[in-house]
Figure (cartoon, rainbow, N blue to C red):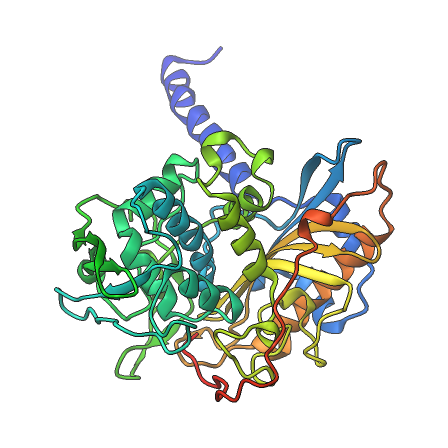
Length: 438
């Protein structure tokens, strides 16, 4: 029989062991056998190395099968490879996607006569580091607008449009609205301006005006007083270069950076592409013309776009289509990709909906990878071209080949995603844009 002391010790030890086991189980990345089967067919040396050691590259992949019923209503099933929502990756430009959706939603909910995504804007400044903005030479009107910011953010992932959408939404509203939609782990706290924590809490005053300069709507400056939970630290690498380019021999701290789990990005994109497929609270309040606009610029190429007029030899068709990014820089003619990508600090991320109009298939694919062999952050020595992009291209290729052969009970009607895109005006003599901050 157990003595009293032993019994008391067991009462203490057993719960601790159970808790530790539960934590260990919870921390295990999720991998489905289907993904192992798909990736087993790779002949790429780079892909084999990465896929056999996914933890070394913080690799996470989600493949979403889409099956239609006889009424063409889609059903979704996710398959995971090394997926761990607690494993930090820097979303970089991925955050532009939810801000674009939120900005259009906000315009609709303001219900101001004459106010829409094409309305002329003017940004003032009233806090340290803020920058006014009066004109936008990349737009057809020559002035800033929510529509042109979204185009620039999607077509080649420019950074200043993100800052302006952030300023329009305000830090508190961004996080509150996304949390209300069920994305409770999301934290968007930073603009891409090198601001400190306090500066990012402040946003600019903004005017919306008619073409003749008459004021339609004034949004005053805002300040976020809400508390963020930074109790969980995200430390990466063995060193980093600070703002003075001095090497600091300690991990880089991402704790207060933007944070969104990969599956949340997949769900956010799905909610706009297929709003009826998600719960009502998860949808964005968009008009039909807003959704049509988003679909167009999530999938249109820079070479097809007149405003902004990007140089298409630099910003080629697959520039922000990582799953189809190869040495040709071109996209397969029958394929359209509705997506958003991000790259920074050695992280590459892509969340996509892919259609093949010739073979009549569709699927979603999301992936993130970290390529930083020297483990030094901010030194601009990342293996994007040698490891990251080749890996994402191979993942896209393998999943595409699998989905191409997959049996479907009902063939999808993809007409809703067969869009009419722009064509470049051959008589337009404007100089193309060759340099941007992205």
